Image (tube, rainbow, N blue to C red; front, side):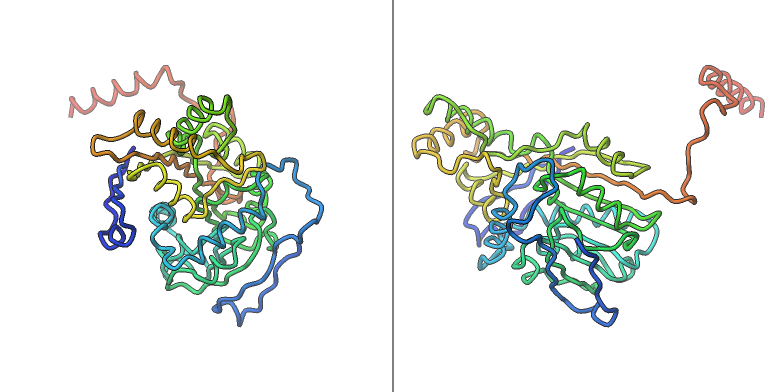
Length: 355
């Protein structure tokens, strides 16, 4: 499914571009401070030993990238994608017919989900992010919020704390995704729900292919310039392994047109989404960059001279077990076989005709 959305004209004038849319200790906070915007540090100290099995991303560099992006004079010029996905997460929250007294946003950025929620649905909202500037420059919202400076990989909350946990376009940067999902499950109350979104494996495939082809032709080999992403068929398994049940995983694509490859890379930097993998190549030669831009335009360019960039989004919903939840019947307890369903349908149609 592809979405067509037009960016506001005011944003286009600001950018000077023509974007077109096509498709760990527990944290104790006194109750009297819940309505205030308070920053508490939960980031692990530099040089501390890590229990992570993998170390793919430079988390300190990612923090610096997000802080730099949030310090820009007009960060809203680059928020179009995260605001769109944040609104879709909020829609999924509204689809659940209940109120959530205490909710948590993991990797909140500038509050792209919270701005779409209301006080009738959310009682109090905790926002966690690794970048202090993103928390300080958060968007306006009507619900009471508490901002917590913490790493998404080390959530500083007690077990069974939140009724709802959400996350939008943040978990693709964690080094240990299974551990992060387990922590989210840990802080959820029984019958609590997790609703998340993250970039999928086909994200920015046009940019990835163009850079690889140009670098191979000009330099005799290539290195990764777009960070690796999780495959959709692995996501359900990871959620189940973390303890979630009644899982829902679906995928969508958003395509944005840019004047050229360099404008795309500028926007990725403005979003705080530059590559931070340890094995990244720090610099590319000028000739290689120009060749990549030419390849991008030749292979994927539109008739008007713009180039598309595809963002694949995985949406996931998982529940923490509670005795009140519906459970599947025991194996072998069925009284009717699938082979007899056709006979039942024929009998019902005959009864209707007789009436």
